[in-house]
Length: 608
Image (cartoon, rainbow, N blue to C red; front, side, top):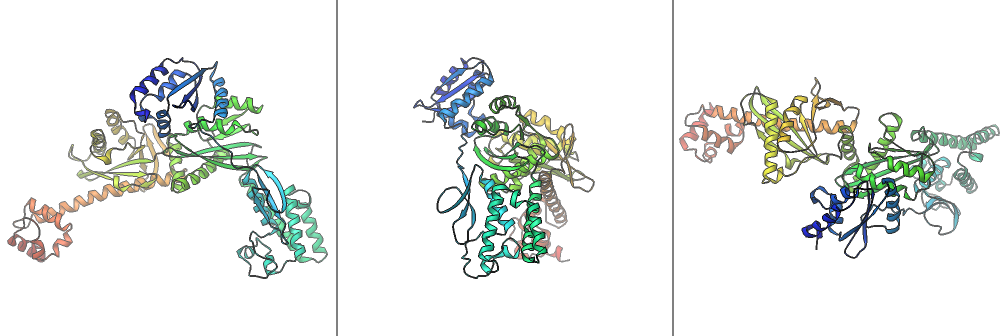
């Protein structure tokens, strides 16, 4: 039985929750078997726990599922919220509750393997299996992959499984200078083994010792002096490869020796958290985690950060994060855990902001694979969320535009973008009915009033969805005209305007307090521009269609025997003046209400 639907059980649990003290503590949810299914902390136990047993519509699907399985709960009062945090972490670690975020470290250790073949290969592996030499272990698979790739590029080693004792045609890597191609027989077996040994030294010691640039440059000059030009050329290429890799690493270097960079991409109730770890001024690891059941970043981080750092020993002093929530409690806990001060930082500009954006792009790309959306679309929604200060990415966006000619044929178009793509089945057209003449403010207010009146009626399914964001084609005036309408319907949806420049291109997003520049946010800018162009096209298309029909109707009324009803029947049947003009009498007679004399009169009129 779904206990969430059992009002008597909910009532009993809520009554118990109402008796809880307004003190900090930990609450423990249990199922019918007495097993712990969720553990949480609270600044005020009564306030937090009663929320679970209130209106289910306010909860995410994950919380609804959890609450539906709650048979009883226990609680432990603590002296402070910080003490509750420590206790919560300890209990979660002991009990591994089903509905808590449990970040299992299933990566294991990774090794670099030099195979024990006649022509050894360098590769990464997670197991100490088979014959060969193993370097490691490494905690980060990312570091191993990067190191293997670098060694292959610098020493021009193959990444294929060919038999090098047989001559064959070299692959693309040889032609682009990434492999010596032992498959073509131009490098001796002894020279190949020398390259492998040099690569091993590079892996173990980096570009110091035998593999240092200084040492390689000395060897290159010595080879050139001894007229060993092929050897000198190989050493020159090796030096250039190391320099290129150093330049590549500079792109992701930072000003601080150690820090973590954390960003989250959200779509619906699915989140992808990306973590970039920088140690010794360079990227040392990157990971991503998928988490379900959260609709905003603050909720994600409230649980994720505790679990992520629970078993970490190497905690940096700086944690960059794309959320402006209060992390004071976590900062204190991590500072005590690590033995040094740990700060959460939300940068607004410069190199640090670019690091967050890079991390967010990676989170969006990973989430796009899971949700079958493109990384560009995911990034645009997350960028727009940050730009407008929304609590979650606007998955369902409604946009409105007014179109008329000097007040005649006054219409509006409503379009919908769902997950950053046009959702054409939800598009709507409106004829302005409340007044005559031109008044874009009144027109916009009327359209929004009619839209949310339909929402309240609940009859038309296409109006049953509340948008995450409303965009109006216009500036502050349109927003101010619509805000009272939303208030009268008790609708709490963020609303902004889309402002164009003198060349009718998207320039900014309007708020009641002024404009937000958008061009620097490339993906959000492209998305808003597409929305503004699409709603304009849709509204003006409807306006022109009505205009052409009225022109057609007006001309038809000049024909003897054709009144308003017959004119409308002809328009509906033929759809355009061109088709009607070229129609034969027999075709015109197919229109309901058209007699033979009238059909002949229409035919003759257009043949003159």
